[in-house]
Length: 349
Image (cartoon, rainbow, N blue to C red; front, side):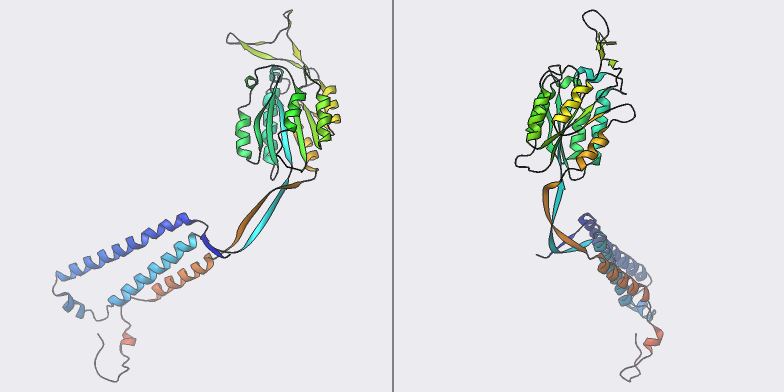
């Protein structure tokens, strides 16, 4: 069905200027008439200016108003819808499971494992176009932070607020995170699914390999990103307003080290791959490249009118009336005034 619209209807408010200009023109004419009446009878004074044409002056103003009106319509970008189009967007659903346990505060990866992981997920979100993403945070338990969504701006906003205080129970329940992520994809969605587990893998408390195997059976690929360097680092904490490090029962500073072998096993069981982060490369780009090779399925279909721009016609009409207003002069043409079509001697006024 054909339809008409303005792409930028807010510019139509400029049409308010048209009656304002008409009022201003009427005030100006009235002022000039009163000024001439100071010198005598207005009709007598007009007779003394035989070449002056009020009709031409008014016509010039009308043409100028019409030109301005067409110009305002052109700025508002008129469009005519001629047909309907359906657009299918194809992508992948990705759930990110982010470890927020205290060990992720270690600073072997600057500024910390957790902050660098958040920055990497944010950059990953910037790379997405038609894909959908969700976020789960976990420590000793797993919680949904962002349900699967295409609203990347909101996802990044929630991501920025993630911290280690979000989980009441400390630990590294990777298996629980994978199980929750597997249940968090859209109901009825049959396309490619991927889970990215970002963790240091330290002190894992459940059988994550079993959870990864079950996910693989559900055609969900598991990718793991190891946060931490081989030498590890102490875990900073704030006590009594001062920065210190977590210590064991003997008073020795605890060094948090990544469990790389376990993360490799989880990725293998889940049919995905493992990448280790460092200070120069977090590794999500490599994982995203792998995910991007997965088959993309229709995520959403949009139907909309295809509109053709009509503003060139309005600009053409505006230029035509502007040209007419410029070509017309306020005074009568003395050569045209001499033409006598009726053959009498009466002079034209």
